[in-house]
Image (cartoon, rainbow, N blue to C red; front, side, top):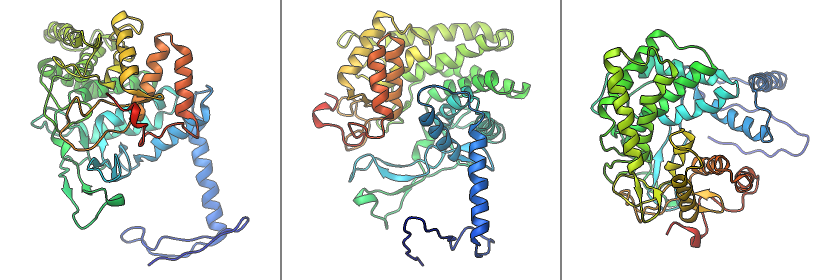
Length: 407
């Protein structure tokens, strides 16, 4: 059943979905009631945003982004989905079509960072509620105490299957439900999660002793397992490697709690091991440099550039003006940046087990802006940020100029 109607300027209409859930009866909605509900909805969102402390130039953009993150939160549990969509293609006709309707630990932790610092704590509190009720109580799996993702209701079983009766967006097949990456080992999620909990403890409410014990247990596990090869932040399907970003975030996971609560980071018997693991992960990250590019690279022993290394100065692992870092920033700008849009990596140089080309990745573009700013290249950073926040960007993220693709 479907109906079509057209409204002209000044006209209004009220309509109801014919199916809103089991046990919910369909009923009419008088115009006065609809207007009252609309007014209450607007008031709720304005009241929620009124807590923001952000007063910078891009206030409207920041607040719109915060609203989107809030809308991605499943209210009953506090889980934050990566996206409300499935099987939208990286490129039309391609196979890089994934189901993102789940709570990725990393993505949700990223969603906590900015709102918490802006004073919008309810979103952070909701995610902490999800962690406490679901993640912290989930038994350890084959890949460690954390899965990389969970269902919005806390489910850990998320099998991937193809819906062969659907052709996909503009013929972009397959259409998928579930995500097989759930079984991957991605060590960086521990650093992301622990850093998010740290920020919540700092900007929101102090965590409980039980939550602290859980964090300490995660640190213990990372101390013993940080040097395993894994699938990495981009959850490639091309096999495990010693990804630099994974080692970097393990360093964050191990180092952060000792600076956060130095007297209770871990029991005395573990502090020596924690310090040794911190130094070892640091040496491992420093080793991921190649003379060919004069830059930090995607994985140990490789020579592929990867935008995830932009997090190195942001995580305070290296000075943003260190000569080795500056040469890395230049190499990334030369080979992975197109009109301030940033590619994650070059699949031709680093096969990821899938056909097709990569589009650019928004979060990497913003990491690039911050790295430029911290390196003192302020004019370039301002220009890149204006391009990213412009209502009419100069280059499409999904259709970059062919000549500017990674070489």
